[in-house]
Image (cartoon, rainbow, N blue to C red; front, side, top):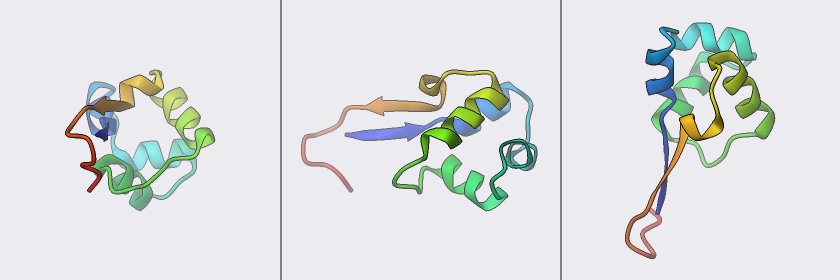
Amino acid sequence: MAIVVNLDVMLAKRKMRSKELAERIGITEQNVSLLKSGKVRGVRFDTLERICEALQCQPGDILEFVAGPVGDET
């Protein structure tokens, strides 16, 4: 099982750079980069809310569940 982060897709659809998103939502560019790459273990709901507001999207546009083999949590 895996949660896939599609933040880069939404940024491209909105023609927005990571730097602009970081400035709008009040986090560092490095944290936006980590979110885009999926190298985070979690995201705060208030951060997710600000991302959705800035990109005018729903959480499901950014986060996607992809089923995989049971027990595959690497």
